[in-house]
Length: 436
Ligand SMILES: CC(=O)N[C@H]1[C@@H](OP(=O)(O)OP(=O)(O)OC[C@H]2O[C@@H](n3ccc(=O)[nH]c3=O)[C@H](O)[C@@H]2O)O[C@H](CO)[C@@H](O)[C@@H]1O
Ligand SMILES: C=C(OP(=O)(O)O)C(=O)O
Image (cartoon, rainbow, N blue to C red; front, side, top):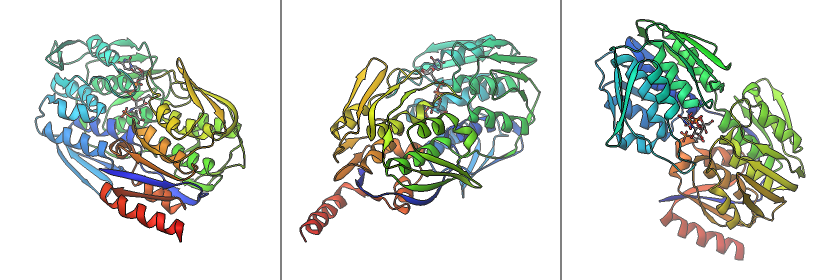
């Protein structure tokens, strides 16, 4: 088992480059299955465990996938299998995103039920409602969801989503590209990753309009072709480094950060007293001496992203005054609060909100990452805690951050990633350093 060890107290400075977005690349790779002719080449692909998992799913489905030098090449022209087994879906919920493509391409898809995860129950009823409206029969049994286009091919439909679900918007969009007729999806998600997927689908020959607005219109076509595409920068990784700079009172240029994708985060950080300047190749973030507490409510885009909730909680722990974060997207995304408490945070949960009386005098401790963003948030907290913080359960971190500790170390953080055995040796050295 590995852990990250952080010794708090260093101000960060320099520049860091963000990778391609995890949440854009996963649906784009799932969409490559729609091409029955030609290869797709996807660039700026981050080397994340989730990317390896989706590639494995595609290989299992009989596509040819090569991942080299941040580039994924997919040839999905052979006949595809229809089933995504539990071993993949369990590792990564986003595996359900192959369902729309398989259903469109084969008229049938069988995907293991994803089940809940650390941040909530995460049902997929809105995805299934969309498929049914397009003429699929959906059956659930033996741990699988099976969908079959009753007439062999899906047809266009008008679909209203009860909630602007990112995954449902993507899955229905992909399914509709090869359906007969026009599909109109209302109350859709407007995230930048939806726009990226629509752009890729259009390069493949699809006719998708309205991505980034509340209504998406897709005219079905008969065939889609492989296409080339560069993935957008990861706004959540960018946001995480913005918080890293702000929390340490640092001065960091986050290269590749797209200001239009980060409007709500920039607004909240500025409200807290952080200076954010647009430069030609990214955002410069300068942390103030003292941070002001604010209230934050997570919302679908362009509202404040739930994927930045725990990192901003770390920042609010250092702010003067009482701050509050209300989580409205996931019902159980506060598992990290108990871990923050282990670091001496003055923090409590009240219903769907978390209240912090700051600034907390944070102390290093051994803490466990409870999900992907919690992992990052605990490491950020370690950057300003007194003493040593050890963060375990790094499998969560590796789903969404490439070389996180190296990137922070290059900005001046005192951080390393070690195997448990190595840690004993490092600890001895550190104690003798202190006694020297
Ligand atoms: C791979 C990927 O892109 N993951 C992102 C995606 O997840 P994901 O696509 O799973 O998130 P959704 O937008 O679908 O989920 C948002 C909320 O809607 C609920 N819901 C969703 C679908 C459904 O059929 N029924 C239903 O009730 C979910 O339980 C959740 O409470 O968007 C989330 C919300 O921005 C982000 O946190 C995730 O990082
Ligand atoms: C919740 C997240 O991802 P996923 O939907 O893949 O679990 C995330 O990226 O923070």
